[in-house]
Structure formats: C-alpha cells, structure tokens
Image 1 (spheres, rainbow, N blue to C red):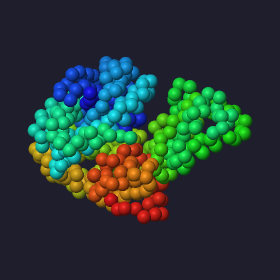
Image 2: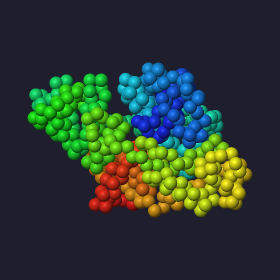
Image 3: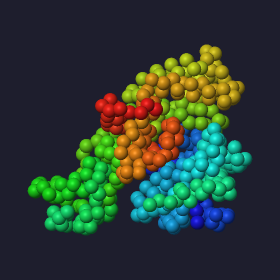
Image 4: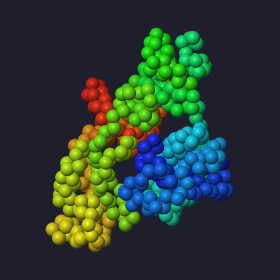
Length: 453
C-alpha cells in the first residue's frame, strides 16, 4: 500500500517551520482506498509570502487543530505504508519531525515522484509538479494546496506505475565500552553498537529529548570519552546523570559531521550545548509567486533554515539594494514591497514600472526581469562541489555550494555518473546554512581541490 502525501508549511525546513495543511491518500496500486485532509494550526504566524503562495491565512488556521491533536491519526495512516511525495524528503522530514515531537517514531520506505519521473519519463525540460502535470495533461485543482497537489501526485504516480517497464519503482525500494564508565541509565548495548566512523551523536534524557549533540571522527571513541573523565563538577555530573539514550547519524567525512552538528545544534537547541547557539539577525531577499502569477521580491528577517536569494545585515542596506534592482531591471516598487500604500505606483509615475501592479504587464514578461535581477545578485557568488569518501565504499559524499549558498550534502553511488548540479541535487539533502558552515566550507575549498559547479 502507498501513502501519497502533500503538506503545506510555514517555511522550508522541518525544525524551524510548522505544518499548516496535510493531505494523505492511501492507494492500493489501483485506486485510492482512503483519504485524509485537514488544516493544521501551526502555532506560529504564517509569513506573508507563504500566505500569498498558498492562499492559507492565519485566520483560516486559527480554529484548526494543532498537529499534536492529529498526530495519532496521521501516524496510523502512514506507518507501514510506502511514503510517496513529490520531493519526498521535504514532506517526510516535516512529518517525521512533527510526529517525533508528538511521541511517534515514523519509519517508512520512501518513493520520490521527482526521481521516478526522471527515470520513467526522461527528457522533460522540468520535473516540477506543475510542469510535469502540464506535460502529462494532468489537471491540478487548487495548486499549492495540500489536497490539490496530493491528488495531482496520485495521478502522476498512477502514470508512473503504468509506464514503469524497467522496474524503476522496485529498484528504488531495494534498500539494504566498559560498562562501569557508562551513565547509570544508559544501556550498555547502545554504546557497543556505536560505529567507529565519522558522524554526529545525540544524547537523550529520560523523556527522549536531545540534551547534547556532538561530532566525531570516530563516534564510539568520542562518546566513550565523555564518560571516562573524573570531573566531579555539578554540571558534568548532572550531564552524566541525565543521559538515558544515544542515537547517531554516520557521515562520510569529518567535514560533514562538522556541518551536521552545526545544523542540529541550531535545530534542537540542546541544553548542554553552549557553542554555536547564536542566532544570526541578518535579513534576506525572498522570492515567491503570488496568486496572480507574478514573482515577488520581499525583504524579510532571516529565519533559521530559510533560503533567501540574497542576504544582508542592515535593513537600510537591503532597501538600498532593492531600490537599485527596481531601477536597473524596471521592477515594480509595489510588487517588491517598497511601496505599501494604495496610491498610484511611484514606478508608473516615474515610467520605470511597466504596470505589473495593475496587471497591465503580463506575468511572463515581468517575471523574466525578476529572474534577471536574481541572477545578477548571484552572478559573483562561488559555486563548487566537494567530493569525498562516503559512509560505505560503494558511495561518495558530495557537498554543494551554489552561488555562494550552502545547498546541502548527501551521497551518490560510485557507479552513478552525475553530469550537472541539477542531477546531483536529486541525491542531496538540503540543509540550512549559517555563517559557521559557510566559513568552514570556504576554508575547506581553499585548502583542497573542489569540482567547479
């Protein structure tokens, strides 16, 4: 059985955002046999650009149930099913994170309709859901709403099932201390089972909450070192007493462990981690498409795990840069939120705006200039890929920096030829960036050879 899922959220990363809408369709390979849809109160304001994209407002979710109230039903529907979504890691990571926060541990095999479509329908110019559906004549009702997008993904998956002559789906599913030193409540077998490889480890308290995150070149050796000292300080003793469990995630290299540790400290905010907890107060340009089809550039305070197209420290700097883009690329001040009143557009008066704010200019023409402005911002930013050892001999690790931004990292089988960054992204997990990670990657790329992006 398959669980075909789509969610809408307040942001682009599970630990910083929250879910606003869920749709789940249980499919037996022939037809839908069960379905579930609900709005969700995210417990935080929905950013205005997300409201413009999805049409889901703060008022719409005010009386919706919080995720904790629907978690059991969602878990019951998903557990044991093959989890399917378009860009599956996004939806799965959000739901796994939210379910774990509610006390449920989701473990599902996954299928991504983006990756499957690349194999079953090769040669399409784009594999976004909207473009795929246009290519395959699938009608999407309520684009950027969970139910509409999930139903479109159902139809897409049915097309994939019918056209999968080479077994792409089957191939995608084929996955293969000394006790006296230990804290009183920590089971010995958890330490025995630790790998002697690079990675990140997590110490959990009696309620399962992560209280410390660490990185290591050798996970077992580093974890053991926490318990072999003789410190009698209150904080160290309290720390040891509160460790009830260990989990870990292997990485291919120590550099990847450094990056993942930095991400996880900011995501989990563990009580015993002191380093790297500084929240950066920079701002950014964010781009989104409104319901009229126009691309909008907005200045927003940079949230954790967000992905702005340009960042800056001071609002005055951002407004100045935005005004320069508006002048140079003839953008609309209203669509860039530089003018927020109901008066006549200043750009129209000054003959720099071509009327997009009044829909006198078609979205396609206006959006082309927005994209040119974005590319102009990115043009001098470096792109490179750091390729190194994988977790196993059969794979290699890849870290992607794209136009000055840390995109993410992951693992590619050694027998897979990756010819461009778009193909590489299918194998990578996106992670949020911060100044620590950016500096780390810049230093590392300067110290060794990197493959240009």
